Image 1: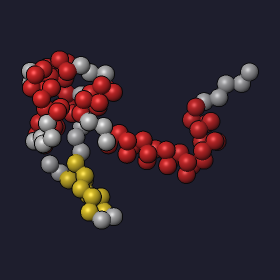
Image 2: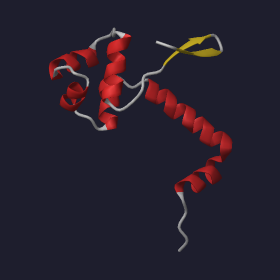
Image 3: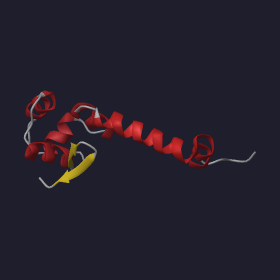
Image 4: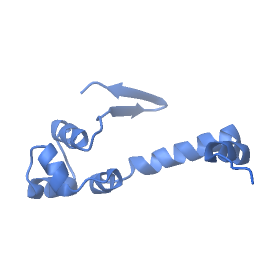
Length: 100
């Protein structure tokens, strides 16, 4: 029995355009995740993230639920999850990565 790699099967079945379409859809869905969902996907508990971000667990819990956040605190939170914060402005058809 011949084994097949997932990447090869995916490309064969979907083709380059299909793979790109799926990638864009996944990226769009990820962009819609809230902070708690992001933290859970990464596999980090509130206690772990709070310690890394130099916050209490209660502060982190409130931060995840807030509708408005400071960019500096958001950056600290994302870094605590092992990531890097990027801010992109979309104006018409243009996407501009902002230096914040």
